[in-house]
Image (cartoon, rainbow, N blue to C red):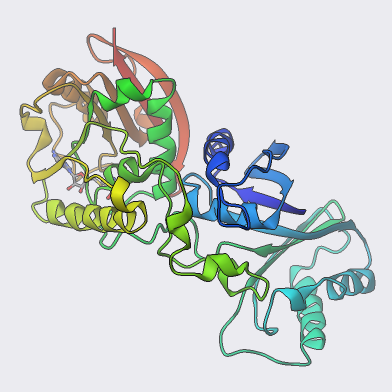
Length: 393
Ligand SMILES: C[S@@+](CC[C@H](N)C(=O)[O-])C[C@H]1O[C@@H](n2cnc3c(N)ncnc32)[C@H](O)[C@@H]1O
């Protein structure tokens, strides 16, 4: 058993726990068949989930978690106020089981501790690692080591993920101000909330300002694995062989799900439908590669139009929108983003409207005929935002 920390954006911890519970029954055991290991006890803390389980299962969470940032393997945790003790402890860790050489990247953070000089902590760890590997340095960094010192408690972790998990490996093109995939996944899950799968399957999801289509590609892949990007643990010396086989993803028996009836996207910028279509095609081609016979293409339509002019969407819809903040939005009337919510409700009568916008523009009161079902605080690229979900009265 090993200890792990799954880091998440602040506020996403409970969704990440839910995701982990949903995917757990479908993970593989060492025989490449669906496993029967019981779900670990998970400590939910600010910014992530800490738990102890088998390495083999934990590493697979990388493939499925949509609201998490990364998975760290906890190498050790100990109290110290003393640099030589810290050095010895670092040096005693089994780095040779994981790393091929001493060239690594460092993430060091220290506060409220006797040893709070981050540079010295890194230099000391670098020296230890170079001694372990007798000065062998590869051309490029082979891993990232995280060192955190807080209240004299030192935690040393090895990154199992590599590039941040919001990089799914399938968004080939981006528009201006794209949103992080982790945020899109969180907001979609908040909208789905307690709705039954049948309820969700009876509506289309429409993003009337889709840009590169992040909401739509995330909606397509919420319950799917991402296997074609790289993961840091794949270059560990002790990476389980199964995960290095190009076809291991075919062993998952996770049902192929496309939650919505169809996906619709508009953008006033005539270049965006092509961008969103390319991203969507890439997602679908990656899903098809491992879902094989179970794969069904999702009905979708992306087109260029000013969504404030209205159009018949041909059936019940949920809308989700991340409008541009500020000058680029052709505002309907004089009320800025507040008018946008009422215009979208008036024009399309969505059964739900989720809108992400700066906190200072708070939608209040709700548009005519609608109530505020939920309101979440979200940090979107450093801007304090609200995600407001409106439903008909
Ligand atoms: C913040 S971006 C959306 C980014 C998108 N969520 C993504 O991840 O790529 C806002 C988009 O709204 C589009 N837009 C602005 N006003 C619009 C309007 N009236 N009708 C349709 N699209 C509009 C812009 O062209 C831009 O692509």
